[in-house]
Figure 1 (cartoon, rainbow, N blue to C red):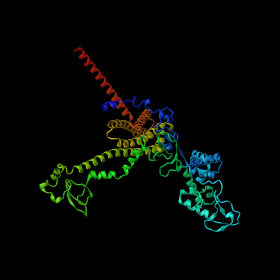
Figure 2: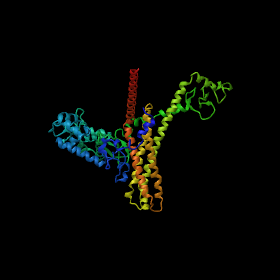
Figure 3: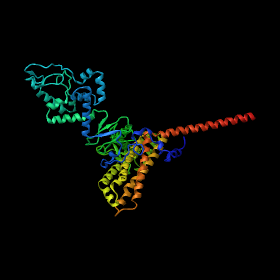
Figure 4: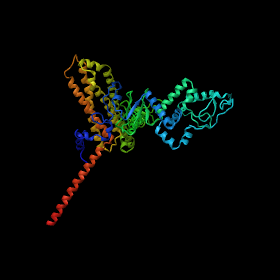
Length: 553
């Protein structure tokens, strides 16, 4: 393989790696107006209050408010009711059973209507025929009432309204399972629809039932999910097969559709899951304990050395005194063993191999902890910077934008380039944060990929820092100016250019990581093939000369 410098040189020019030819032609559906692919980064939108959400592409998903969910739900019920020539109550029961999939309902119904009716509990004919008796006995309370005091579902089993009300109220208070309510008769599977709830339940229970009914449209629907942000009531209708799982709710929270964690492109869901588990697990605590403490030889509790002396005393009730170096009893130590600050007994034992395994484990734990700390600190720092950038953007929108407009005599509509810069910073901080999780799990033996990854990451981070410094510090001179500045147009050009360049860097970083840094493999293959061809050519020439000299001789 060529040297690492040669490999980096191959990707150092914008004409190579950052050229338009490198962009993925499969994402044509997500292209924006200027023909550049959309990698989930921010774009201009009229609604500034939505912040990040309004600037991200929503071509592969739609954010639904409660009224939107209700409208979709009613439309699906009406469609099934019309096509199958059944009541809307029966249509809603069918849709709930088949997870609100209209296509699945149609397929199953037309394949075997009778089987579907029996399975779902929509009986075409009553099991118990209507009675002409003047009084009927309730099968629950066993009291007798006139027929008008009885109600039943499609099966025809009669129960008094009082028992029906108690039955429905109890199941509603038990939770969402009330949506799958069946006839009270133990042997009957006839479904109970919302018409019975509307007729017999109290207003409070009706409200609960309707809330469960509405939420089931999202929770049972395979292509819809609630936004996982605390307190958010929006839902996301996602178009499967679009490739990019990152979505942004109108509440400004961005998350991954596939795993519902925070948006983490370009890192896959498996890596995110491992990283989050590692951050929250006790494994790093144990690594720290192994790296920075030793067990008391008596009680085995871990002890951290906090002074220079090697004479250690365990905490009460143990109070065992031992040597930090060799873990031997302190009473065995004296001038003959090296005094208080040097124990040659440990050195002798180490030379004999007595402590090799312990030292190896401690060194491994220390290295593992240092490596994890390196990546975690940078991951957390970018998260903090992103949160600060979101706060600064909010401050700009609510106060500074108007102030800047007045001082520079420029309409707010012409200051959108500053908002775009902040939104780009917020998005890039998110991407950069997750690249550190990617780097942590990049295999050590793939050295070429690691070199290439760190090169791309460094270039992107450098561009982001230039953009962040420009919008954070250079903007202050215009906010604090007494009047219009002639340098403001130059600032506009500089900031817009940095925004565009930074976006380009990060688009290509995302593209490379999502491809698994495949360009490193292809470059290595080409280098290997080239080297092999050269070697073959040299060998042929050498053999030719040998034959010629042989004939001459």
